[in-house]
View 1: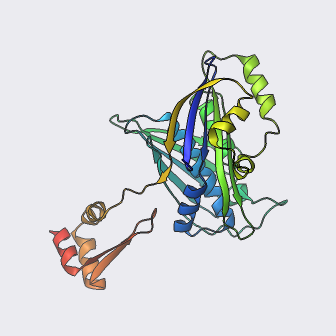
View 2: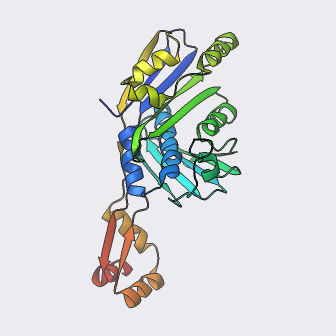
Length: 288
């Protein structure tokens, strides 16, 4: 199982953790979004963060992460479900920013002022929505801030995307560690000290270290039980039927305009870039 997520809990019950290899997933979605190098890193981090947070979902629950900053990328959005199906998009795929100090300028591309939105469909009447200000715009730090301060679960989130000399995704992945109640401050401090200077997840993945072994290193050899192993796959639930419903919802005036001006219509899914074409007759049927 190459592209997968592992979720564990330590034997002493003090921590839960997840690690994921998202290399091929990030590569596929970035290819569909036709992003430049800096946007690859930014979107790849958000995709990996969503993959890790999918380990907190159950059944038919879904999660969306939206990053809205004042940088050139505009709005980044990723959706995932409890089964590891993920899709993502970016408003402006070309950040056009050069590296800063030898690193891709993700914070500059996202923008240093803005918000992280978290939307959870938990199967209730209305989705749960939360919003926090971006702290560093590096995405991993912002997700950790949200989990720690909005969900009141002390968390560490490390996300990585590494490109090769040709600008292709060489490795992508990350880990998330959360302290469970009632908490033990000494153990938390010890783990924080251990994670200072911890090697990038992408370096470990390129060395062939799989997610379970990464968690052994992250948790500094603590014993744990594996609660979940799940594949991570690109999944866009769009279909000709769902797009037709959207078109029908535009109303007679807009559909008439499409028929008269274009003789038909074309819709491109923002996520998978699939093209759906409707001729005059089909649009007339939708108009009713």
